[in-house]
Image (cartoon, rainbow, N blue to C red):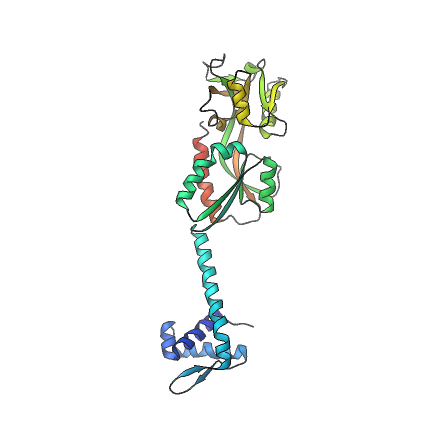
Amino acid sequence: MKITLKQIEAFLAVAEFGNFSRAAARLHTTQPALSQSIRDLEAELAVRLFDRTTRRVELTDAGREFRHPAAKALEELEHAVDGVVELAQRRRGRLRIAAPPLLAAVVLPQALAEFSRRHPGISVELADVGTEQIIERVRSGRADCGLGTFSPGEEGLDRLPLVRDSLMLFCSLGSRFDAVSSVSWTDIAAEPLITLTRDSGIRRLVEVGFESAEIAVKPAYEVAQVTTAIALVEAGLGIAVLPTYALAAARHRKVGGKVLTAPTIAREVVLINASGRSISPAVSAFATIVRQYAQRLTPG
């Protein structure tokens, strides 16, 4: 069956006015074109929809039967079109984000506040989870996008770079590194090291740094959260090597951050989405905003 939207609009207009010329004027078309649309529709349905007299056009029983569902179908189509337009114009929709706890705590709050001010009709869901869960949520469609640092070998993900982040030394105020702006990996070889557990991507980067400087990694403390590591540093229990954006989590602590060199270890903080899936207008708008806030929190 090949019924067109134009035919349905013609039918409903004639049914409303009971007159071909007025219906044609409503639809901004000619009367012959309108009449042809009605004839084509009747041919497709194999039934007459109107009884035509010299004074009036009236619906047949079949026409009355067809009128309500045809009007409902047209109304639902108009609602669908309006909904798509609202999504495209970012007036309505849903955004599901997955991010590691530290990024969720120090980068996303202000970024999401800005996003909500610009797009109040879009609801936001945030999952602060580990890297493996972020990847799983994005791949399965349970999250529209994810933030973090991910192995280049992870397949099925498209990446949008947000900011380049370097590892820094975090030390307590008053420590022997307090007066300097930068240190090398060999400078911290003898210091008690507070590091993250082995399932952390940050821990793997720290190990790369020590190995590059030909220093054995011997942690004094291993913890799961960056905020815990910073608290232990503040207590004078050792030093930690953490991402630059961890400075935001340390701003109210008696902890300083120092540039770490020889070598400099850097990685990309990226926004990921599932390969092969279209990026929604909401994700595109969010990416622009979160990049700005990520760059503010990772000074060069």
